[in-house]
Amino acid sequence: MKQINILVGGPKNLLPENWEQLQGEWIGVDFGALELIKAGIIPLVSVGDFDSVNKDEFQQIKTHSGRIVKASSHKDDTDTELALTEALKFDSEAHIRVLGFSGGRLDHLLANVLMMLQERFKPYALKVELLDRFNQVQFFPAGEYDLQKVSDDYKYLAFVPLTEIDQLDLDDEKYPLHTKVLHARAYVSNEFISNTAHFRISNGLVAVIQSRD
Image (cartoon, rainbow, N blue to C red):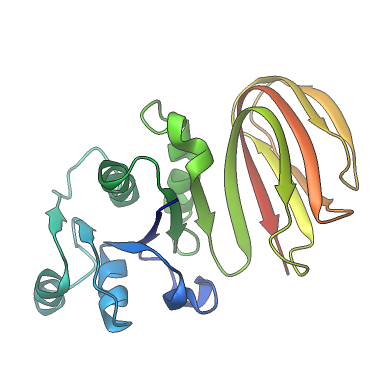
C-alpha cells in the first residue's frame, strides 16, 4: 500500500523522532512545507494559505515543491483538510499519516481530529492516522478489530467515541468495557495487557489513541 505523509505546521519539538526517515510521498502544509524543504524533502504538493511564511520563504516553497495549491485565507476548509483532499486525489487507496497535528492552537488540534467526521472523509477513516512524538490516533468505524501496540513504550490506550454508539465492547484491555455511548466522550488511561487489543464498535466512529509519557 502506498504511503502519503502530510506535514502540518505544528511545533517541531512534537514531531516524531526521525520523522524525516518515514517512507512515502510528502505533502507540506503551510510552514510544514518549508520544514520539509529544510530537511531535504521535496513535497509532492504544498498546500495552504501560507500566512505563516514570509515572501522569501514562500518563494523557496514554490521553487522546491512539485506543485502549489494556494488557498485564500477566507476559505471554508482548514489547511489540513485541503492537504487530506489532495492526498486522496493522488491515491485514495494510500495510507495517510498526518504529522504536526498537535501543539500550538487548541482549535487546530480539535479541527484535525474532528475532520474525520465529515462525510467526504468518513469512507477513508481506516486509512488516516495522526502522529506526533507521544501519540498515535487512528479512526475506526463499525466493526471488530485487533489493534497492534505501536511499541513497548506506548503504554496507554484511549477510546474516544466521536458519535453516539449503540454498543462499544473492549474485551481484553486492562479495563474491560461494554457500554452504550449516548454522546461523544473519552474513555482514557486504559492499557494494553498484551501486544494486541481487541474491541468491537456497533456503529458510528471512534478515535483510538495510543500514547506514551
